[in-house]
Image 1 (spheres, helix red, strand yellow):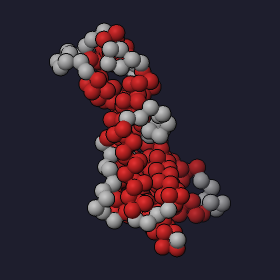
Image 2 (cartoon, one colour; image 1 turned 45 degrees about the vertical axis):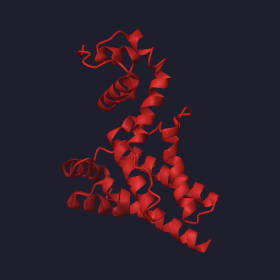
Image 3 (tube, helix red, strand yellow; image 1 turned 120 degrees about the horizontal axis):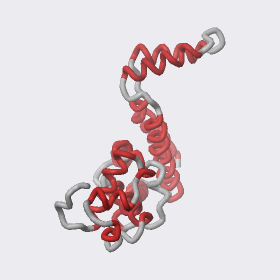
Length: 216
């Protein structure tokens, strides 16, 4: 049991819970385990966080607070790009949050500013409200979807890429799937990492919305 070196408060509880979820996954987090980590009885947590559901809300708010807010001083593409890259980086640090960031219904004003700022940036740039909402939804869906694939692919290093590719190529009928063989060979020889394609795809999306904005 860890020593309780600092006074117990909501922020300490939430940040400790985030560290535990980062290390072991959200499914392994419980109020009992959290209390043990903090060196207190479980009942002591409920004065600050009434239940686990509210704890998770606080964890999500904390994660969103780590993401970069769009700046109205930047061109909308720069603001949107920086926001998306920041969200990707934050979610890869906290992979347990990938599937739940947009699923929580209880939000603080600070966390809602993250969305408000992006919509405002787009509207200031001349987007219609409909196109702004399409852009927000599409870009965020790309970020979250890419992160889900990235955390589930065992390809974090060139060595792992080569190993997985070799195993894959051993299963591929080369005469029947020549294009997949070529792609696998390129991945193995170049050290290609899936995550390196994030900004490439992001720029394609932003270019598409820039063209749509110009057309409108």
